[in-house]
Image (tube, rainbow, N blue to C red):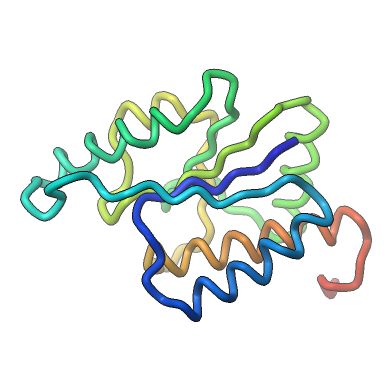
Length: 157
């Protein structure tokens, strides 16, 4: 199963890019993984909140395949422990999905059309993080989940 982290906007911080690259490289040992960053919508700063969410939704929809299993990283989603997320990931692999796509939206969240398209929502934390930090935290948790599934010593129980 291929895992994709689909994001709106670029990561400005070279330090964050370097850390994400570190975990992205480690993940290649376990699964086919990629981070796909979409450009911000044109004239984003001139759009109202709802218009921006809808413009982002169009960009995200274009990047999705009809058979993708879509999971939104959303503050109202299901909360997992690291071990619980590993179990969730294992179930998705056993279900035979070709692509599992985790989506990080823009600063205002997601448009209703994306909520309707998604198969699930997952919450990373009850706290709010910048969208750039969420990318790093998610990639690290994805790596951690794979090490848990392989009973490797990265995660201490």
